[in-house]
Length: 269
Image (cartoon, rainbow, N blue to C red; front, side, top):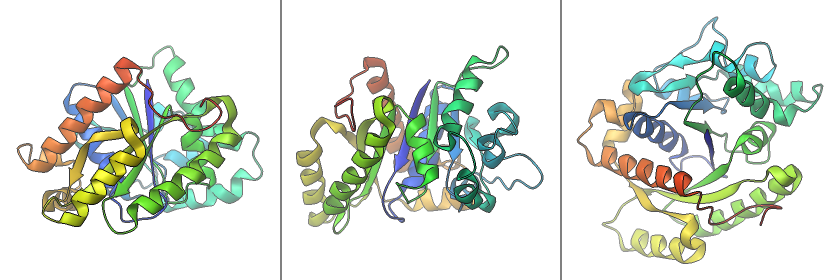
């Protein structure tokens, strides 16, 4: 089971869009994919047309009240979704009274893998909240093999990415031996502008092989897919955005199968 946490230090960079559609592209390849919505805004949940009412969600999983399999929704595109609601915002306060609160997600995922009747997931995609140093993001990073820093190819993106790496370093120091590998994904790329092209070159120069070769281009179809509550592979499998995420999924699978960890954050470096 390969677990990747999509992180950033600000909203509006396409993180949730990347999480949903990477999960969709991996599922399209026949992989069993779990998408975990760790953001109390629940945008990944809403973006897949899911609106839990009385059903268990990630909150109950983190509190140990229900198993991962007991809270999973079957979402469009063959994605298995562990949904969130606004109640997830309360976990920050509740966690102060819990033992090992930062390991709650990792423990739940390990239990799901080892359950006798459980079917292991090939990939677990964790959509993190914008705050990298909060309890929910720390849960994600403790559970993750790889942190994927999502960087919008816009103004100040390089400076913001470097600052985010510093925060990830601090979080990884607290995790210790369970520190994660790092990859960087460029999003919202408009190849028509010289600025975006030059910034993409600068990101590759700064992060080297940690940078995914695939970049996610701007696309109206991605916004439309979210509005329809489904991944873009279902809305329009032939569109440019579907092709971008198919390429990203192929690159991710090649990465994990080769075990080519290129840039490590934290004590394993």
